[in-house]
Image (cartoon, rainbow, N blue to C red; front, side, top):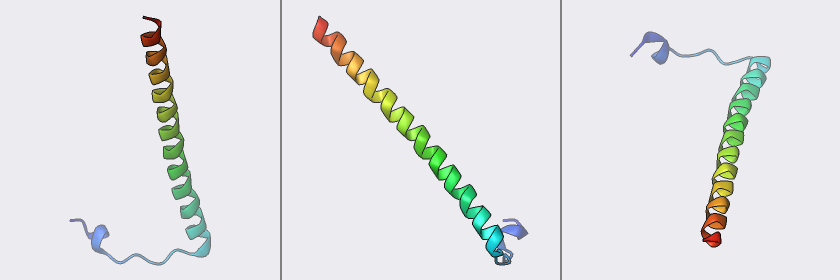
Length: 56
């Protein structure tokens, strides 16, 4: 374990805390968009499969 992992951290200033919060929210939102796109692709692929199976 590295020293910086166990060393106490100074509290963030309000400006730094706001910036960190925005960065964290951005990462969360990007992951949510990525997951939603994947969900939509899966749904569309399933619909295409069911349409093909109905045609047979």
